[in-house]
Image (cartoon, rainbow, N blue to C red):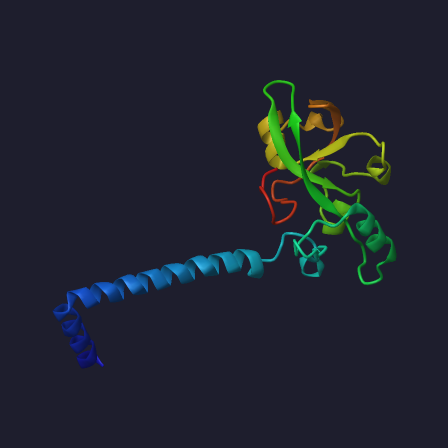
Length: 192
């Protein structure tokens, strides 16, 4: 085997152009495989940080123009009330608000149903999550802050829970703050 290795090295030394192509091809192949494995590992192999994450599913509506369409609220309510296949069901959509009071800052977040955190099996680090009365139409405007927003915008002040904060279009009451490890879903910014 040592003789074969010496012969291969001598052959490569005699043809530097071919050697360069071989080395570049190997480098590109190894780099591409590393990049693909990193994505597959983070998306498919690493479990989500939720209780019983293997039992969580994301449901979409399918339309001819968009195979992953956002579920309409009426369909979600029908699915929630009539489903016998799932122990519970929650819904979320992307939304945002502009915090005023000081320098304005747009915060991207999620509008969720009242049972969102209980379905995921997580609780706020301080304060509480939503109640059914707060999720009802015309209910009070409330928010649960991410840990990152709490630290950045409010300096980690635990007394923010229960207070009303100004946002564009009115005020919202802060119900709680999520743990630093919490990420609402694997889509979108991790710290909002």
